[in-house]
Length: 85
Image 1: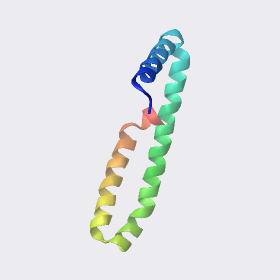
Image 2: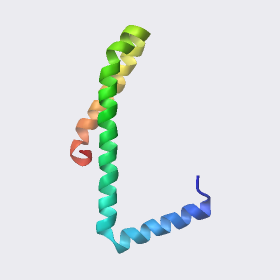
Image 3: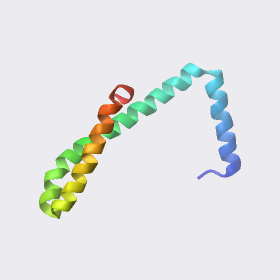
């Protein structure tokens, strides 16, 4: 956790970098989006694999919760597929 002064300085540095070298900042931003997409794909795969086991071991309610989370995750992945992947 940064102090308020350190946070303010960090924001100034970030703002200066964004203004002085927008191409570099765009590349960094693009890499961050790609990482988010990879995590979302990984989460989707793990949820798909865990859904049957969760339903059998923890019951229908846990399986239903996992299925709802999986559907929301899949919808987000589908909605933002061009931006993250």
